[in-house]
Image (cartoon, rainbow, N blue to C red; front, side, top):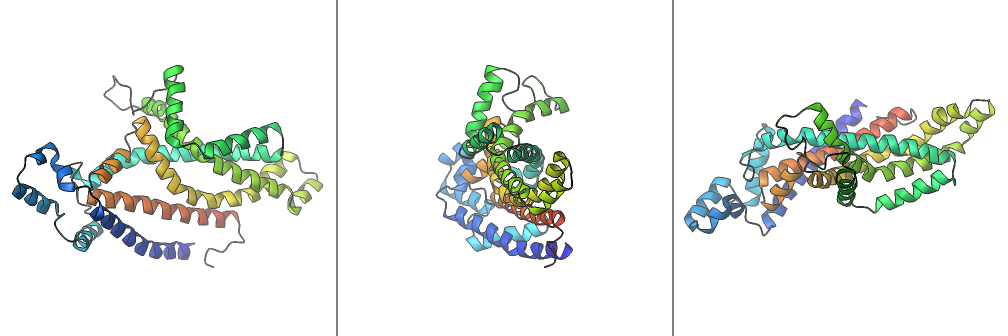
Length: 321
């Protein structure tokens, strides 16, 4: 396990280097001017000398490779630079928002895995039944539904029509303090929407895996020994059927990140979505690079987690092979 994690860590280094350089290259080719975005309306009346001085202060007058190398050298020491659009250190921008994004993504992932597994097992147990047909049809429909559309639909139904859940934000409008109860109630809708948007893949993988496991000889042997159906289903078929789903976890991380950005925007959740949008539209090099590295690292960790979980669930898989 340690050797595999070490190999993945070494592999991640050139990947992260290439990704960060790509961010700077794309930003350099962008038609947006970071100086004008930073100056705002004041830039309309500023002299060219003032704009040139501001360009030098922001470091965007340097060649692409120089900007990237300077940022990389500072990042290695823990200095991610200053965000020109947020007017504060990049590390502070991320620290203020990453916790809320992680809370939303973690809750949504839990919803997708738990509901997807439970529905997949029930559907596989009665293949062709009404539950199997209904949930499978709904899963294929949800696969094509954008997360932001599901979010708007949830706001209309639960917040506006029924009035049982808040429409967005982190706390109530009249409150100036953050409490556990308010955060929990405001988390329900965005977490459910994001979780439901990821649920179809987990459901379909578990359903097919458990259905295939039920036809395998070990499961038939367990039934022949007189074990009850619950033990056969949960103790034998589910364990074997979960193996394909474990590999799905890493591949869904990019979709989870993308969906989280959309859901955060719809529900005004105070995560990294707003910072990402502003960094992209304002060509904020340091913030763009840091957020991209963060997303890339999350994807690499998700893939590593999938391999580790698969190896732990199936002893036949060698970690050091």
